[in-house]
Length: 309
Image 1 (tube, rainbow, N blue to C red):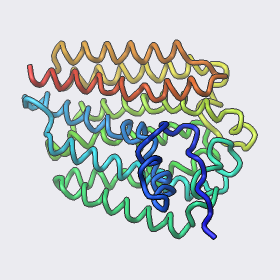
Image 2 (image 1 turned 90 degrees about the vertical axis):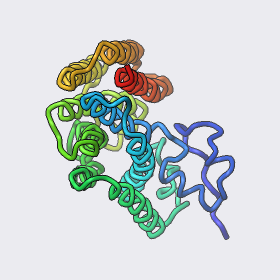
Image 3 (image 1 turned 90 degrees about the horizontal axis):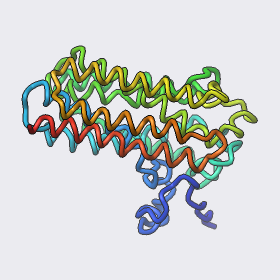
């Protein structure tokens, strides 16, 4: 007898096409890849696009390489899905103890471990095909991220700030756009990477507020628990570092006034998030977390417009 599909998770986008139109047999795998929660691949993609735009600006090109941007988009969707699948494989026992995650495909039994491993391999293959379209240096840079990605799911068991390791992985695209454009790295993309890490730590701390009570019961460590009642100050420090490092990256890349104006709007958005944080409001935390897509797009649009002008 076929097991009935579990309901969509509470932080999924309502009415997403994957829930409405995908074949029923595929839905658990799409949930495993978090397809119905596109904010994840957006947040993985944006540092790639920032870096590609920064590289174009530094090189005096009129826009970021369109092919690179498309490849980064495909790669972000595939590798975010692969990362989530790997994370769920590692966390399948922990996920049964947390209210928000116990309906995920593995702990709820919608997908077998063997099926999840096969799906992980398929997504990894797509990511590999995308990566091989770049130059040799960019390929090596992409492979270098895998160690950090493999380490992340284990960090919440013993490290109070696992979001730092997530930042090291999720911000890697800040190096990739520049590496793909120039076949090398320099100070500007490294500064952008540092700023992106701080951004990830900040927004994922907000995201972790949804699970803070369950995490305390189960013993999962997170930056939200680490900051405690000072979570606003903690996220504020992360976002301040984000703006400082990205400012320095723009200076190194000889950015113009439009880039800095966009950065100012980006900074205002981050400040608005900090002001709205409520440690006891999980739904509000999810809304603030998702708003980082718009913040990131503002910055990318400004740097791209700077290239054009």
